[in-house]
Length: 118
Image (cartoon, rainbow, N blue to C red; front, side, top):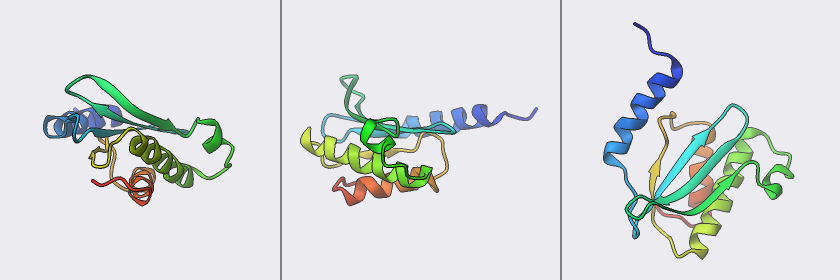
């Protein structure tokens, strides 16, 4: 029985989440990628709190009129700036079951450039 793309991603995501979890000192950067947009948030799993969030639907990023990969890099930079304001410097990266290339890699690189350490 063949798995659908989403079922396969869910299995990979669950396997990753067994290992990667966010704490107050080292929160988790979670990525969700739809066909059109990309969303990211920094989560403290122990307290169940979202520390910072950014997406390609934010006004300043949507106004940039960049392609999807460039928009992902802008989302990473915006998220890193919000996280640094909130006092977060190191994070653990949760790619959410997506392959680490293209938009996901671009988002991670943008966050690193803006000062987050993973």
